[in-house]
Amino acid sequence: MSALRELQDDFQAYILRAPNAAIARVVDAGNLAAEERLRVYADAYRLRLLEALETDFVALRAYLGSDDFTALGEAYIAASPSTHYSLRYFGGQLTDFLARTRPYSDAPLLAELAALDWALSAAFDAADDPVLTVEDLATVEAADWPNLAFRAHAALNRLDLHWNATAIWRAADGGTALPAPERAGTAVPWAIWRQNLQTFFRSLAPHEAYALDVLRRGDSFADICAGLCEWFDPSDAAPTAAGLLKQWIVDGMLSDFSA
Image (cartoon, rainbow, N blue to C red):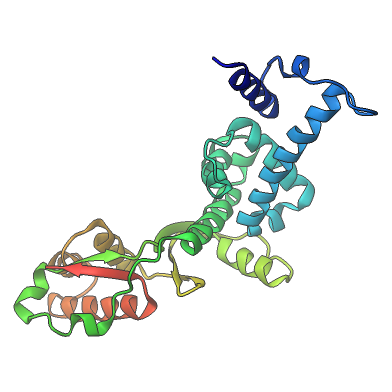
């Protein structure tokens, strides 16, 4: 290994707080000792990671408050060091961290706030897939509809939330007082997506959540209709599925279809 590579590895290890020999490779400069010079870079790196978390987890930060969020960020940085050259992906494990790490796991609302924050960030940054239109389906023959399968837009995501995370997010985003935590009796399905440059989320009725999940899995229109018979008379299943499909297209949730 070259001397330069060894120096780079030691410097990176110091930044990541791993034992290393970097301090021996740095000289004092004026009033700054070698350790202080290195600490400038290490502190700046951690502050940049914290800044990335603050940007991606708006509702979670608002709910915890600045000091507690910083403490959470420091704990997360220590447990889940960044493994990607882009800060965009650094917060990807925070939801799991909150769900499995005490004392945060004792407050499950925190993991749901993180999941919602991350889903909205992911929707905003998702690939610019083509957007399916109603006109795109105008040429489909009636006999081909049962076999149609649809591809969801890259920005579309689904969450099932027990807590009022979306109400807290709205308040945090609007700069108003946060509502008190509330837990629903059963999980509420939500869709999160982007249309143009704006992100959206809305709750789904159980049958719509089912149909959207089946569609995202790649099942056919006929499969969606068959599943909807759990909620509707068979004669109403196809019109219901068609209505849901039209709404998803209008919302910009779908990207393509195939027969």
